[in-house]
Structure formats: structure tokens, C-alpha cells
Length: 452
Image 1 (tube, rainbow, N blue to C red):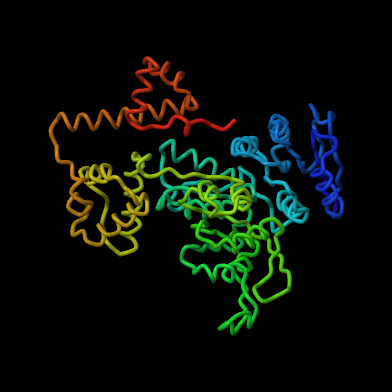
Image 2: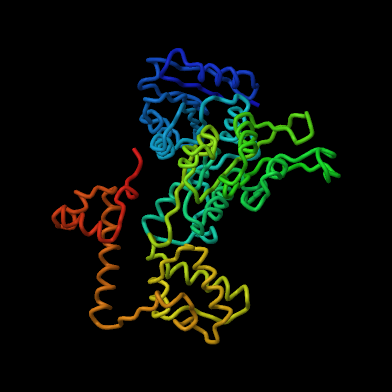
């Protein structure tokens, strides 16, 4: 087989990361590896099957965009030192195949490069080969706050780096994590999910990495652990903030070295597993309090994804509600066809502290209890505070105007990349008046801005 041509690129002449990357790839017969460093990088058009770009703290993504545009099928991997969210987003937008964070693990780099060029467990996926999002069950929504995260999801799926999903409870973190797995090159390999909060602290290390027979009392048989079960696939760690400090240290070592030891054993095991973590807590705050390791947080937070609460995407409630009605009607064999307008209005007026999960449970309960073919207001028990008490013309008009204003402002902000001045000009409104509307509806302009 003809070796795959691989080029390690670095704008810095004396780059230890680039040297390590070149050495790791040169040792493999599958690659014919060379290096391009220093001033020669500027304006260069590399002729290689795969490019490994070692990006420094102050370097930009212009070259990446050029390389991916000229050859969409060429694999481009980025190794970054201390990247921030903006730099990561810019790399993904530039169309890179994968993203790694220094310090570099040479063996992990080799596996990532092989996967990117189709030499490891089947062909690598590109944005053109990803299945359409509507086929992913549960990812329902059209509002800008939601669709922006969907777009990031597809880019993250193409990469093989770790993902940290944050958001309030019930926003769909596991659904997004599962979608990333099944849209990735690991889709044919295991998907293993665990809720860290449901595992006793003293058993977490054993659950993750396994134990040898006789490692402790009642360990009558050896256990492989969840990392081993997920070999080649994805391990989803929900409520990652609940794991003990000791287990955090062992997880960090695994993320850095891709190796681990089972409790009671001196044998070192290796595993090729992608970690996706999730939390409804602010991990940065926990780091400041000393309750979560900073180095582990940086390792988990390579590709961050923040899911909006349901109150920020109220216009998605009709589609979500109908989706859940159809799902539970099929599941329970009920002949229910939809919801009345008043029922939808009741759902729209609820605060939804439990977000999409609460909406799903509410619809499930209504489907089970409904005696007709359509869900009505009487089928929902959401508390007296959610009942629309004022049905006058003035109140109804006010609600419609509020809904129009919010939707109109969000569409303008999305169209103008979150720029309030440009959005106000398009609306032919004074900037101050337009900003007052934004504040009235508690809209955050920043979430409509694409990353540089």
C-alpha cells in the first residue's frame, strides 16, 4: 500500500510539539511524513493527504480555511496550545478534520490521523457524509438559540476531541451527546452512558476502570469497567461534577495517556474511547472553589457546547409538543392526533423549570389520561399560575404583540450576527429603542454572534 503523505506544519521554527508530531508519524510505515516550519508556511499551499497544523497562542485560522477550501477531502488536524473557545470555534468553522490539545500524546495523534484519513476503523466522516439532523430523534427546534447549537454539533461530530455539554437540567444534554456519537466515525462502535450522580463516590473508580478479582471485599470476580466496554466508541459521563477528586485524577490520566490500571492490578491497559461529559453545574465555579480539578476541566472542555433552556426557545414548544404526542401515542397505543390551540397556549405560558424533560413528562401524562382524540387545556395540570386568567381582547393582543416582537428581534439579530446597531438599522428603529426591546424580552444579543 502506498504510504499516505503527511505534512506537519508550524509557523514557529523551533516548535517542540511539531517535532514530537513529526517523530510520531515518521515511525509509522503508513505515513510518508515531512515538516514545514517558520516563514515558509506563509502563503504555502501544501501538497499532502493530511496536514497536522501546530497552532500557537497568537496564530489565526486563515491558512486553515485556504487549505480546506482548496482540497475539501484532505484531512487537516490542529494541535493547539491553551486554546480558548473562540479559537476552537474558528478552527471548526474553517473545516478542520480534528482538534487536539497540547501537551501531545504521540500515540493518540497517530490514531486520530489514521481515523481522519480512513485507515482506522473504516472511513472518516466529513460534513458531506453526515446524516441529516431531522433523523436524530429528539432534536426538534427552529429557534436561533437551538439551531446554532445544532450547527456546532455537526462540526463537533466530525472531530474526535472531547466535548463538554453544559446547560440546565432537562435541556437534552444526553440527546445531543448521543447525536454527536452517531454522527461521528465511531457510530458503529459502542455508545456507553453513565450518570455519575447515581454511582456511590467510593465505587466510581471501579465503575469507570474496573477492578481485579479480590481487589476489595466482595470483589469475587474481575470487572472490566465502562472505559473497556466503550472501546472504540464513546463514553458519556453525565453530571461529571459528581465524581470524587481521586477518580478525577485517574480520569485525567486516561484522557492524557489513553491508559489506565484496574483497581487491584498493576497491568496497564490502553483504550481508544472518546469522552463526552455533561453538567448542569458551572464547572469553572467549582474549579475556583477547589471542588473540581482545573487540569481535568481544561481537558474535558476542548469542545464546549451550551444548551439553551426551554424558556429561551418558546417558539419550539408547538413542534416539541406534537413530537412527544406522536411518540407517546404510538408507545401506549392511544389514538391521539394533536393539541388544541388553547392547550398550546397553556404550554407556551408555563415557566418550564424542568425544560424539555418536563415538557415530555407533561405530554406523556396527558396522553395517558386523555379521553378524547385531541389534548385540551383540561388534560394539563401545570398549576394555577399557568392558567391564562385574562382572556380579554387587550390581553390577547398584548400576548400576540410580545410574541411577534421577540421572534422579529431574534430573527434580525441572527441575520446580522448579533450586531445590535445593524439590526436596529434594518428594523428602521433608533438603536436605543431597539435595545430597550431587547432588554424587555430578555434577549442576549451575544448568543447570536458567530465566533471569530
